[in-house]
Amino acid sequence: MSEKNRAGKRTARERLADEREKQKAAERRRRTLIVASSVVCVLGLAAVIGVVAANSGKDDSSDKAGPVVAPSGAQGEDALAIPVGKDGAKSTLTVWEDFRCPACRAFEAAYRPTIHELTDAGKLRVEYHLATLIDGNMGGSGSRNAANAAACAQDAGKFPAYHDVLYENQPNETDDAFAENSKLIGLAAKVDGLDTPAFRTCVEDGTHNSWVAKSNQAFQNGHFGGTPTVLFNGKNIYADQSMTPAKLKQMVEEADKG
Image (cartoon, rainbow, N blue to C red; front, top):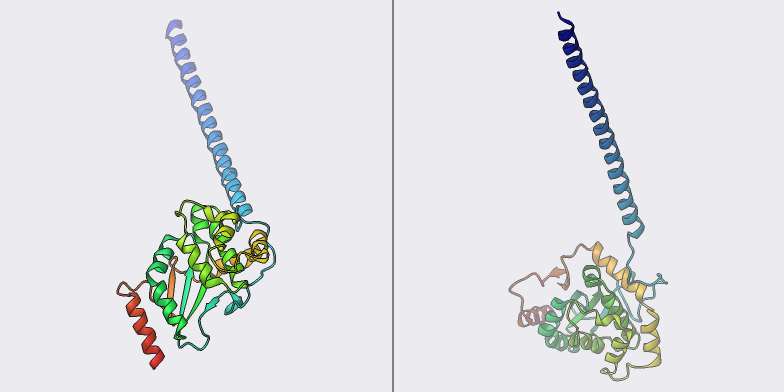
């Protein structure tokens, strides 16, 4: 073999060796990047988990939790129900509601006259449970603050009237107007005798905020589909497409006779 050919073969071998070294180096870089990327992903996931854990159970709109103060006359398990009507009524309507909830307002508008008629006649007892579903879904604190104000109205013996005023003046779902205590106090003027220093202090101090949070937790634990949830003697009637105020009245009348 000529010297020229030997030199050419060495050159080819050297080029092949160089290429192999480059491939090995590239493979090492690739593996390093994979490992580094994996570490970044794990660290990123850990960071996300850490943030979620740190914020779990927090509500940015909530003040520091205080003692659970149930409103006057609250009944039921953990005193989470605000009763309206006579205790001896043969029918009980359990209503889970949110003062920011448009569907709750629609239910109230349709059924309020019938419910008032039946509770006034002593034939129906209503247990109101307050939730803050819209605060959780839309953000804000209007559901909580309105529920606290309603509980303050219960302390004053004015819950039914103030309850109705809140729904009659409900803002749009995306408008967190009920977050403003001044708005809630202003609406109290529509209820005779409610706008007092005691009521104002109760609203401004968020006296029942922790009770509202506990009520909302009970709503979550109940795995209800949403608000309103309306139970007649324990049976969900809001999901009944055939239900009407007239049908509800008939059910109550029949139970009262029976």
